[in-house]
Image (cartoon, rainbow, N blue to C red; front, top):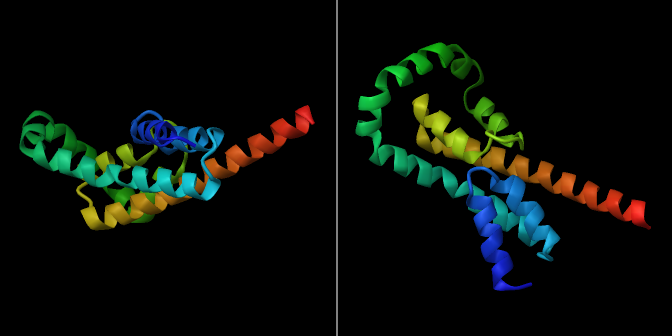
Length: 151
């Protein structure tokens, strides 16, 4: 396994479009040991959350000037659901390994909804761990089915 596998895995994991769903299968397919691939991709994907929060906080005033009304309307519309499901709902949303349900969207949603950053980070981290288990399981099942078909 070469340094390029680590770099490409990091790139796939940190891209908003692929995140963990792209990085973990890539790492395993390119010979990274399973546990290392899982831990590496999950940690990298977790690091997205503070970066997104920092980015949004830095641009907060500009974003609120441009999108303030939209943000406030969005908060008002989903307030009951946020109150009902809260951080568990955020974790479950991030845990679903489908496009537009990862750490980037979870962090953006938590910011728009005005959720506590530390609690949101914990919820997103939990969601990323769960998503990692789901993606890992899907990859392993795919490998087993593939080798069963050709064997």
